Amino acid sequence: MEQIKLNKENPKLEFKLNSEDSSLLIHSAFVTSQKNFENEWTIFISKVKLTAELKYVVFNAQQGCFIDERKNQFPIHLLVDPYQVQPVFHLNTLIKNEIFTLGINPERKFYRILKLELQDVENLDEDYSLEFNIEKFNIDT
Image (cartoon, rainbow, N blue to C red):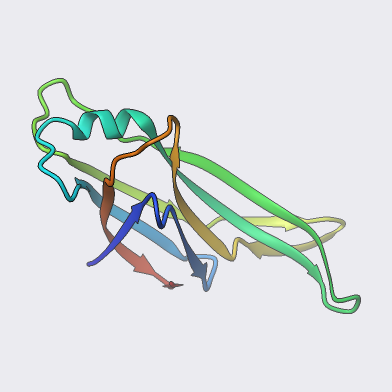
């Protein structure tokens, strides 16, 4: 198991998907802060949005130019239970690579990039971080 961290200074993390069966398992997430924040972590969760995005960039090697990109973006929900007192979220979210065809050529492709992003829904001044316990399968950072 590996740990990664997203925060205001580093809100994005990209992974390189090596095969069509690449996947990322997010076991859990934990809110941390430099200050004593007791129940203030719920305010942080209400002001951020966590998204995952699978991306494939279409590049023409002969002409040496970017043509297009295929994206699949979706949220990862951090729902606070009414009785939850600890800033821990047991997600057990599996993000699997997908296969698709592109253009008139029916050659099968798979997404090459997985991006996790922590976005501000409201302007955050706090120094909170979201730490994840993950497992990678056929993925490089």
